[in-house]
Length: 145
Image (cartoon, rainbow, N blue to C red; front, side, top):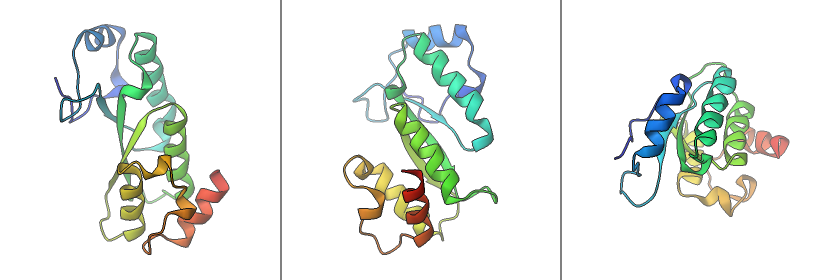
C-alpha cells in the first residue's frame, strides 16, 4: 500500500501505529518501505517529533519517513528556519522532500532540486554549483552547520 498523500503524523495514536506496522507500506514505485507525512510549520516541531518517536517505538524507523516540507509559503519563514527543519530531519534519518509554494523563487527551486536528487548527501550546499542559489541561503547554511 502507498500512502503518497501522507498520513497526519500530528494525530497518530498507538492503535494507528499498530495498524501501520502491520501494513506493507511502500513508496510510489513500490520499491522501498516509505510512509509519507509533512512538517510544514516550525511551530509544529514538538508534535511532529512526538509522532516520529511514537512510530519508532512501534518499530517504524525514521528512515521509513519521506516528509513533505512546504517552503516559501509562511511569511515569517527565513532560510535559517528552512535549514533548521531540514537539518533536524536529516539528523533523525528522515528523508525531507521540499515542496516549493512560490515557484518564482529560484533559490527555493534550487534547494528543492539539491534535496530531492539526494545531492545533499554528497555535496554541501555552499559547494553546490547553481546560479539560482541566493547569498542568503548560503549564509544561513554556513551558520547552521
